[in-house]
Image (cartoon, rainbow, N blue to C red; front, side, top):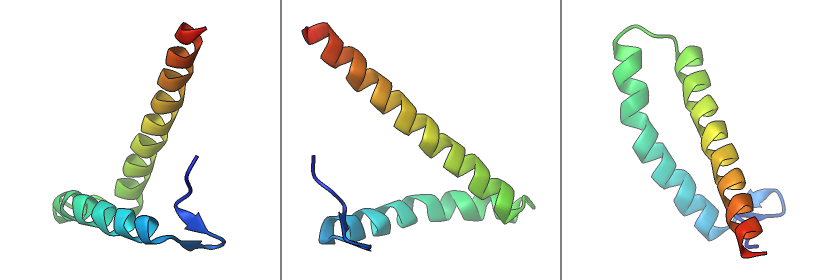
Length: 69
């Protein structure tokens, strides 16, 4: 499996992904902070969704791999 890290820093792909993610999340972050929500709570909701996507992706891949057996 490929890595987005080169030691303790991002690879070129990692940097591109970081920039892309920032551009996607920036308007969402602004939208909810402009509505008066705290930066910390906005961050927690976003992080929770990232964790959920990670778990769903891992489980989906495991199920697909198991079906191949």
